[in-house]
Length: 299
Image (cartoon, rainbow, N blue to C red; front, side):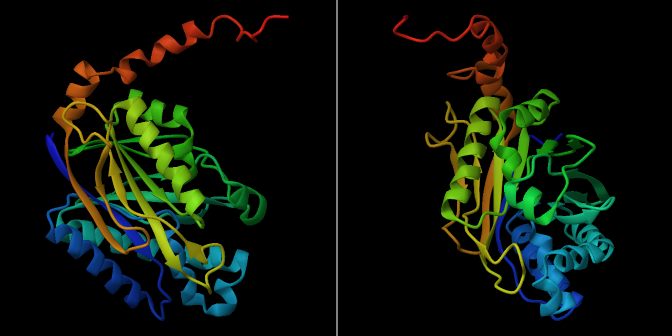
């Protein structure tokens, strides 16, 4: 496996599209830019696929159910496009997630593409209130997966999933040393929830977490009208890493790529002999909780 990996996280704005070719041209520009800087893994945001809803016209894209159905309708063409770009540029791409109907309700699916085609997908596991109460998006039924690639083992924690430590922990225990965290957050507070969660997951699992947010305004695409964030790549704040844990970071709401070189050898070294050993010491927690939490002062 490759010991050093160059990863790019997109801060990606949605556009109003008049044809699928416009989407293809846009995506090709983005992939070409990152690949031109030597990036080997490219990460697009959660709900990046929702701009495809604009192809149905404003009446469709402004309707909750209509937008989901229209974005999902273009999934086969989008899969073919991403796979072709991954092959052309020799890169791995986590495409912008979007709705896929596998029953009455859609899941929120992110697909990983490599030079040889589709590698697999990860469906979001835990829905936000908007997804479960308004959109009716369903959690993925297949659970979590780890993608074993020549660049390392990769896991995906989509947006809200990054805020739940046991999900990332399961991926780390399955061998993942790079976690991809595509996000879609309307507010600055939402962005910071995902950022804090992603940085905590990097700390706990002594790994790299790649945060790729949706940004900007899309007033005619329901559910993603306002988006806030900054692309970044995080690692554990330990010896050999930046003291802040931030390997690369873009400016708030500024479209483009945040790119960093990742040393898989450094991840292994930190997990084995870091200043702290969060990964190794995780299993000590149950013993510390074997007695009830005490309330002081005792009555």
